[in-house]
Image (cartoon, rainbow, N blue to C red; front, side, top):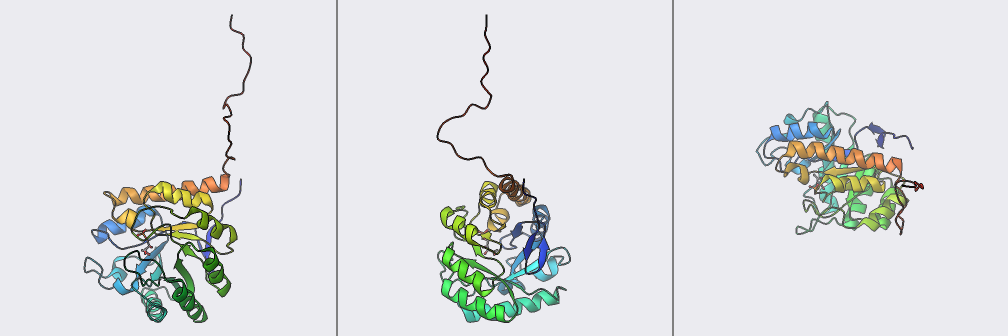
Length: 265
Ligand SMILES: CC(=O)[C@@H](O)[C@H](O)COP(=O)(O)O
């Protein structure tokens, strides 16, 4: 069996392959306990909503940034100029939170309000500029293998193809494109958005994804604390299964116990 290794992004090593978001929780207490239950190390925060989340609280003060690596995201940006400005602000906020060397940005450029689908051209443009400004860029993209390759070639540190639209909980809608991205990628592939249940997180990992990012399915579950744990198990199970290697699918049945001739008198 293949030995597992840590997830490497931008020169940093992470043991957890589950990244999580911070939006939509009913309270910061529930959010903090849920984050702990996921055992995640990377937590994404929307820079535009960081100082006044849905509960009127400041996320920067609520989360212990000695325990989690901050992944500022550019949610709410509709073009490359906005995304670049927000990324720069995000880097400052990470520094203010004590993460001096944190240059990470989850790049989201989303002009479409109805399906929250990312703009591939503006994403590529913003990624190139941010990489030149020494950012570690993790772009959120549609499951497009050609775009994923181009983002890798210009120096992105991961690609983050969507499973299905953000917050939709529809799971992995484009399995064949996701598989092509994984097959061709030399950088980590993180499946981001749309995962609704642990079996979908597991499915992404079984396919060979390097990680997943989940927010809504945990925050909006009837019991977020339990779902946080379940997602952690799902990701771990899928990763183990990927390393173990699945059996080949067969057209015909194949008895589980060997046939032996026993004569019954
Ligand atoms: C928090 C975040 O970055 C989301 O934009 C992300 O895409 C997660 O999507 P779900 O809420 O569907 O898990």
